[in-house]
Length: 548
Ligand code: GLU
Image (cartoon, rainbow, N blue to C red; front, side):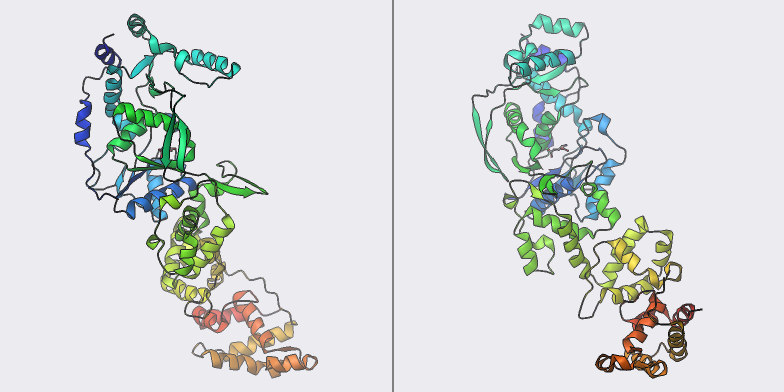
């Protein structure tokens, strides 16, 4: 059979470059020997999940700890799954977590020499190589219909054989020249399949960068490489793209491990040296007593949007993921509590070989610790970002007064004090904690433990004495001075020694003032709160809390 003629009849483009040209267009990258070129290659479905971030973090670390390149390729061969704005959303989501690409789709970079980075725009490259494989007798057209393929699968299943298109079942593999041209003349749709040279009798020993030594069975399936719409399958596009984008290390989910024999064969017939592979294990969670994969349907925490909306501190999510990625990260982080996670020596070989457990409680814990370390200004930036996207109109109004909020945050977070506040795990909690510093969100439900006369007396007397210029000592002396007027002990120790002699103690007086000013029996230092609120607002609150 004249294979060149067949190749031209099947791949009709008249503007394809000779395959060798692509080696020149996309030359080897000039990088150090150790430099890793990694990529994230999502489909533009609009759903970017924790698994993507997990994998992107490994990609990014491998590239950036070796002076390599991390790029974004969009695998859009399945037009039906495409969602508008999905690419921007991937970039924005990862950026939120501090992960930036060096080159790729929608990345404005002078390094973009290996594009286009959308697979649909690379059709000519794929078709040039498909044409070459056909002319070498390594690929052929298949005219089988969906019904025919289903019928074969049924027979294979009934006979307990491996399903697929191979060996005796590969009907179109040996079509005569006459039959092929007849089918073409009749306008029958066709796909192009690889003419596999492999045999399941052969094993391949292979070294995965995460799983270690793996033995796989050689491929013998005549997989589809070009679909009937002229667009390649993932398998074929992967081989072409990772070769010409000069990827050195493919980090991808372990669900692809079973396709590895196909990918190794494709690289071989294309004459390419395969990249190194690292197959990451799936993220799991405990569901009762059982461990299971995180699921899009059941687990909102799988979506990256969940963390943005809930207001997780992005660095905390990344730090927590680092603890799953490399088991010695946690220890390093404890020894170096103030170091940036990027200083840690990340290694792909230290990644877990099976099921990585994702534990939301642990993440919350890391988040509380990270937030507790923020300065009041960093905390403002963090909360403000959440407020601008997810807060209420009132929140946004409040956050316009940056300096006021910064004062409030310094107090709330215990900045400069001995004990930093360690119970805020998400932005929303932080924002709600400062609601009482604004009149329109100050909605107290006063609950006093003393009779109305006592409460009113405390509020009135203190209002008359209050001076925002007073320091803490003077402020407290004034609170104490109310005690004898209402039969309370000025010293808590006196009260403790003889509770029967008093109606309460000085700390109860402070509590009455606190409930009036903040609406709560517990709060940070009340004297500072009143100073931040200002005299007028503080007095107003003392008055508003009076019992009728
Ligand atoms: N588009 C594939 C996916 O989203 C990429 C797999 C790979 O990284 O090679 O699963």
